[in-house]
Image (cartoon, rainbow, N blue to C red):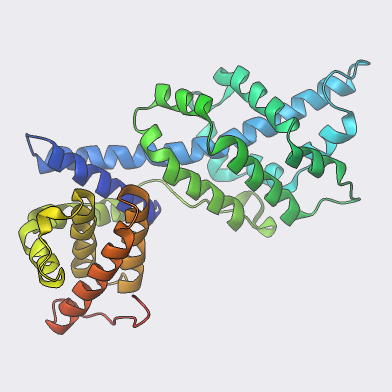
Length: 316
C-alpha cells in the first residue's frame, strides 16, 4: 500500500493537468494518475538506494585503503567509523529495498562518477568531520541516524547534479522530488534498530485500495465540480471565486471529495493534508485561506448531514 499523502499529491497534480488540457478525458487522466503514482514510489526507493550507494562507496574505499600502503583518501579509522554506521547498515539489508534493487536499472552503478563526487563532498563537510572524529567505543543508533538525516538535507535534498540525473531518467521525478524528500527524511526518523531488515518503508507498492482511494478523489472532484464550488462560495463571504488562486480551488475540490466520500478519514486529517498541499503548491498565504474555508465547509456539511463525522474544535 502506498502512502496516502503521496496519493493526494498525485491526484492534485493530475487534476491540475486535467483542467489545463483542452481535450478533457477522465479515463486517460486516471491511467496517467496510476502510472504517475508508481513512478513516484520508484523515486522514493531510488533516493533511499542512493544512501546505500554512498555507504557502499565508503566500504569500497576502506577495502582499497586496507589493501594499500598508500593513504590516499582518508585515514582508515575515519572510514571504519563511517562504514560502521548502524542506520546505513540496516538500510543496506532492508528487505523491501533489496527487492527493488534486484532490478539492475534501479541501481546507482551506472552513475558511479556522481556517487563518488557526492561522497567526496560529504567527506569534506563539517558534519562528516565531527561525526568521524567523535570517537566512541560503540556506535549510537540515534546518532547514526542523525548524521544521515543531516547528510540528506545538506547534499541530496538540494542538489542540481542529482536533479539533472533524475530528470534524464524520468520526466515525473523533478516535480515529485520535493515531496519525496520529505518521505525519505520521515523514513530515516522512523527507522527502529529492533526491526532489522524487516523495517517497513513509508510507501509500498500500489494495490487495489490505493487505486480506489485515488479514483474516488479524482472522479468526485471532477464530476461534482459545480456542487463543490457552491460550498466554497457559501463560505467565501461574497469573495468572487474567480479571484481565488486556481490551485486553491482544485485543492479544495479534492478535499471536499475526501470529506464526503471517504467516511473513515477524520476531518482533521483531511484538512491538515490539503493545507500542507496548499503550503507546497499555492501562494504564500493560500494555506491560511484554504484552512479557514475547509473548516467552515466541513461544519456546513455536518449541519446538512452530508457527512456523518465529528468536527474537531481545534481545527481552525
